[in-house]
Length: 241
Ligand code: APR
Image (cartoon, rainbow, N blue to C red; front, side):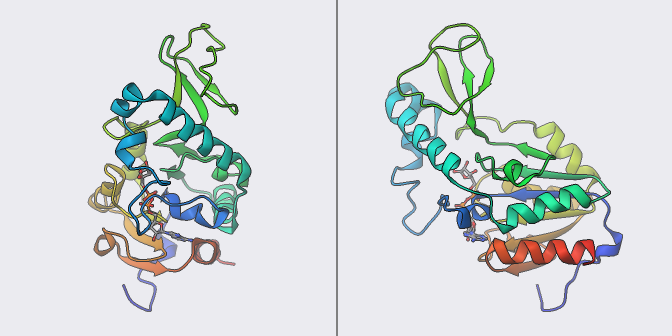
């Protein structure tokens, strides 16, 4: 860390960007680890585990029905828009790996987006294994459009489950010259370990966050502030505006 930028933009071609709840905070979507340690007023283990879903499916469905509504009501902010512009204009490889289940990167116009923790607007049928885009509630246990069975669950990676597309993520990290972490507390693995992996593969590492994350010391450079300011500024630097 320091006042002078420590990353030389001229040597960067391939970029992996990891985003977390902090990038969507200014769109009105609450982060997970606010001071009270509660996740939207529920303890995490009461809603975001396969065991919780087995024990009390209605609570879990109601919780994700609420989150789906919140996601649909939210709008991308300046940080999502800046990353979409970078995705459009960056000539090298670029991958936005998001831990977020909202679709704000896509609605801002980004194409190279990977949802490692699943998506609020997708459901997964436990009977036939199909996934479907979904905007309604699941509380009434609607049938799967493919098989007619009534075993739809949120297409969300819960604690204890394997995040999606890890091979692709590590492939991208292996080729990255720059790893950028935006709006994530660094509390949840495996995402929290990407910075170390990226560095071992030879990348420089930049953190953009409101406050230093748990893994802050792992980054070559940290820029603190709200994502709506730090992300557009960084993108402008990178694109040489
Ligand atoms: N701009 C930038 N960063 C912000 C902003 C903002 N406006 N507001 C908050 N932050 C930062 C916080 O300081 C915090 O470090 O964003 C981070 C959010 O951290 P978490 O709430 O822990 O969210 P995240 O890191 O995405 O959580 C990871 O945990 O429960 C799970 O699966 C869920 O994907 C989620 C994972």
